[in-house]
Image (cartoon, rainbow, N blue to C red; front, side, top):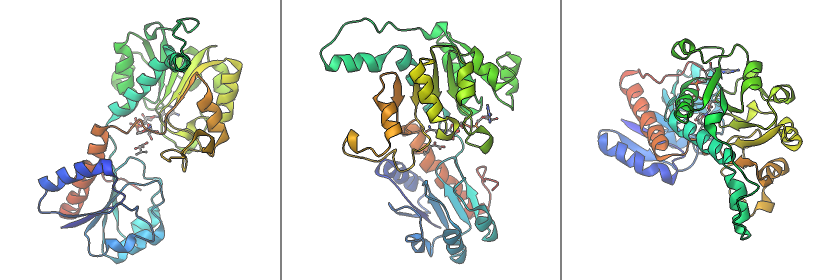
Length: 332
Ligand code: NAD
Ligand code: COI
């Protein structure tokens, strides 16, 4: 059996090597380039393809894979929105993803940022750089006195709920599909508006479907308590960035943490060499603020998550080739 793995980064290589050692019967070609029209021909002669990229998996690419007799495409990430579903279907290509490579990775980044905002760490670090080691006026707040509102109580939201409870916070949630266990515990409010009204901190953990676009907007922000916080480690499209900036300017929001951002593609995970060279002025406006924490979509970026992304996608591809089955098949 032969699998070609595209877009393999240096940090993924040791995990792929480990997988190869545990699966000596599989011949694996490691390709550092992404899968696109210029590299797809390299897949000729292989039985399956493993990839992760934000670039689209176009009809042109999928038709070529079909032509080469490849029936298995395994993605190392969650989202499959960049796969041309019609082209995959007409070529009988089965697609798998890795839906839960580490919900903890994302929840742990969310709690890190919540604590950094409440304890004013960015302000203290900024002051220290100019030799100012005084306490005032950065007096902090305690999480155990706060209400955390979790929007989306799926895999990641549920881990964050447990973590926040461990800190002694009151946690409430909103989800159109309630988790029965959490429902019994009475965690849910009935509407998103209620969540925005009652929370001191809102953490977003819902998917980037059309209905959720700009779920954080002028209206929902106006419902929030004065001096509250927004955390977005889900998807940039959930937040209307202009409305967020207005709410920060007015003091309605005391702060925000953004691991994802509306216009992040082509900006996050890019080295611009200097702050001035970053191409997005709205993003720079946010990054300059001492009460806004911007991270370039790093919540997933842990050793545990990356290992799982590599090894579980390779398992899925191997299983698809061997049996046509996998518990990670995505309905396109
Ligand atoms: P999940 O599918 O397990 O849970 C999502 C939950 O959101 C579901 O329970 C769903 O019913 C709920 N939901 C849908 N619309 C909602 C709405 N309008 N209001 C409230 N809840 C709503 O997904 P997950 O694995 O927990 O992922 C959550 C988010 O995190 C996704 O957007 C995902 O893309 C993102 N994510 C980010 C990173 C990162 O590195 N920052 C990594 C992985 C996932
Ligand atoms: C996801 O898996 O949905 C992520 O957000 C992480 C991805 C950028 C690798």
